[in-house]
Amino acid sequence: MIDPQNIAGFLDFGALTGPWQPALIGVIGGAVLTHALLLRLLERRAARAGTATAAPAPPPARIDAALVVGSAIFGVGWGLSGYCPGPAIVALGFGAGRVWLFVATLIAGSLAADAFRNARTRTRPRRRARAAALRVSAADR
Image (cartoon, rainbow, N blue to C red; front, side, top):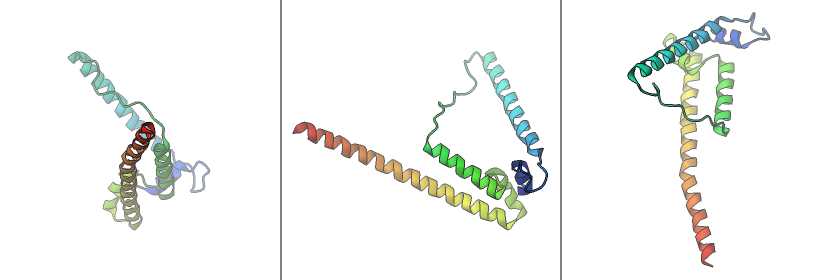
């Protein structure tokens, strides 16, 4: 997971970087299996304790522009660099210059996204208050 060549080999079905490398299927399968077993264990524990659920229900799925754009940026970044955020942090210990650049841009992008989100949420209440004031003044006429 920390070698970009493995990631590129897994994502490259067209064999531009050499033969397709299916090794990450094992990593993904192992993660899914571990998660499924843990969920089953939590369900059994909850059933013994007499509670309805072991964990709170996830929020309803909502596909919005932020999710689509964020997913696209993540996918393009992963495909171009060969690094996923978690393994990139681990790869920092190996000192490759390319991973340092990736992590720096990851942090910068995260900070920019937070600043953008905070700016948007600060302007929304003002817009709503202004719209409400305009409705009230129109009703007074």
